[in-house]
Image 1 (tube, rainbow over the protein chains, first blue to last red):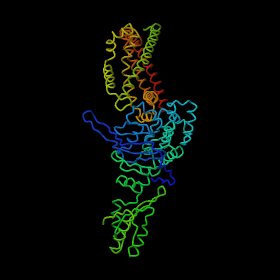
Image 2: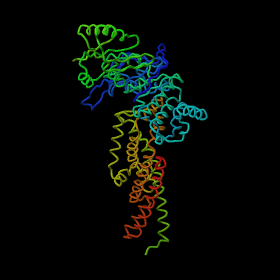
Image 3: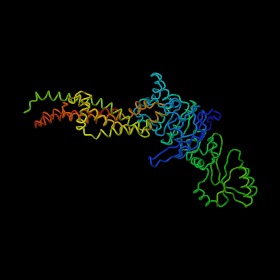
Image 4: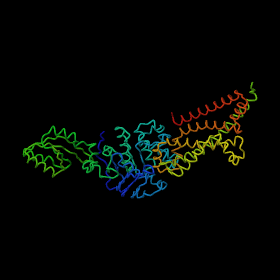
Amino acid sequence: MTAPADPDRTRHPDGEVIVRFEDVTKTFVTGPAKARREVVAVDGVSLEIRRGEIFGVIGYSGAGKSTLVRLINGLEPITSGSLTVNGFEVAGRKETELAPVRQEIGMIFQQFNLFTSRTVAGNVEYPLKRAGWPKDKRRARVAELLEFVGLSGRAGNYPEQLSGGQKQRVGIARALATSPKLLLADESTSALDPDTTQEVLQVLQRVNRELGITIVLITHEMDVVRAIADHVAVMQDGKVVEHGSTVDIFARPRTGTARRFVSSVLHSVPDEREVERLRRAHHGRLVIVDVGDGVDIGGVLSDGAARGVRFTIAYGGISVLQEESFGSLTFELIGEDTAVQDVVDELSRITTLREVAA
Amino acid sequence: MNDWTVLGPELLSALGQTLYMVAVTLLLAGLLGLLVGVGLYVTRRGNILEHRAVHEAINLVVNFVRPIPFIILLAALGPVTEDVVGTRLGPNAAIFAMTIGAMFAVARIVEQNLMSVDPGVVEAARSMGVSRGRIITTVILPEALGPLVLGYTFLVIGITDMSAMAGAIGAGGLGDFALRLGYQRFNDEVTWAAVAVIVVLVQLVQLVGNRMARRILRR
């Protein structure tokens, strides 16, 4: 599955903070009375999500990302720390006190969670009924929302008559009904095939751009992040191990987890099996260098050539994301040992270089 | 041998009494059992009004009443029935005992059917800021309506069975008709006539229940 990277993504680096996590921890107590066990699902997380952005949270299953998103609208209470949404402290609130803040936050789910007893229109109308909208206004709003998600002709259908992608679009329309400022998307495309995933991601992107709604996107697929997220937080064992702009994480992943996620979509660095194959095919010195805008690898290689150092590109890939190019190339360098060493030193000076062990 | 010009109208009035007892019991036990069943469900662990002590207390009462054979419950409730209804005899006394006996069965049926509701839709409603009371009436009950109708249909048959037993303590109805005019006089034709009417009644109820459930479940 390859999501087209989006070049003209709107960035909102200076938007005001809409969700702020400060040292948030969530502990679950599980098991029977005698064998109680504490599980730390979210561990000391501090994050800021800014108005107008699409904020991705990526991690393997069990990393705590679904719990993290459920803390925002108080579906799960936090154990310690502070969590504010629009300046409203969510921590320590009773279920009844959370109603106003929840009406400002829409949510969509991996399994869609549509009401099977209601039609498509009935599902979208439900939150409006609860919010006390009069009937004629409800009807107009439902029509407008179904138009937005491209399901006008399906108003009278029941959820079981729809495809997965259509169900999720109904979920989106329902979540947007009361015009929330924030949309939480919990693995919203994980139950969908690649084509349908793109269809839903496009709707989410329009929700962000056309309606200006901030989106928190939970996923385990780096492709989803790459397609629409402005910022991304990488979670592992309940902690945010790395976060930054999507471009930064893709171009310069610092942790092993982030690197594995990046390499799941960008295959610019050879894995162990590929290294073995490269070693068999190439007998010169093998080095992996990171490439990017303004890194003059060509210049170094030309200087090397003047001293009799030849090179072959053995592996690599370069991608462009948000107008910045990044990637890695694996070179085989052949020539007199000291001349090759000089080239390696010079490359190490201008970029990150890793040696492929002989 | 039997004079159906006399027995016929008696059978008809017995049917009327049975229908009256079953209908009133269904209404009372149906409503009370619904409340108890919803109480059991929402106080369960992980549910919207999780409360262990309350859940265990309701559970205890339900488990206490449920295993008592109805014919014994009927006799045991005698003094209470007399206090509440004013008499231990007749259809209204039977309705009181039947309601007590049936509502706890209803409670279990309701609890079990509500457990089939996808917790995801409840979570979706919570995420919209819907109050817990509203979630019960506008999400949980509508989502479980199909199975609930089938559960209540099953219940009607159970109550019909109870009403026949109540005939033994002078409640009237088809049970009384079959026992008094059939069984005690070794008159199998009369007994079988009552059985036939009950079978037809049960079939009709099941047919209606199935149709309603099918419409609600759209299959």
